[in-house]
Image 1: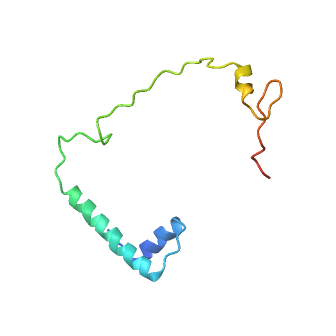
Image 2: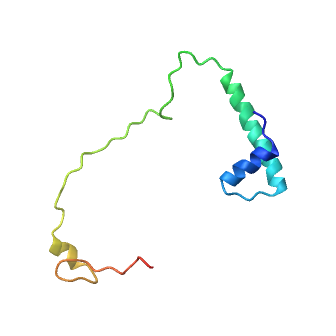
Image 3: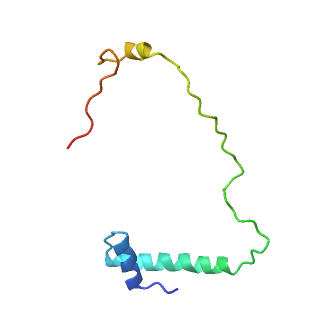
Length: 96
């Protein structure tokens, strides 16, 4: 695929980017290099090569979610600067 100024302008428009003429020329060069590299990769024989799903062999070790009562409501309210009998009061963070 040939990258030209029109293609770069279309990509910039889709990405909502405003590019100068110099940036457009540089983008043409960089995108062409990427496509040339991809064309080289497509020339490789990959039969028998397993698809890469993860970059390393590490496996996430997840624990099961367990409901625990680590502290009581009264204990949680002890250090709250603003509170009523049941809840911690916090400053309003949503503005209209």
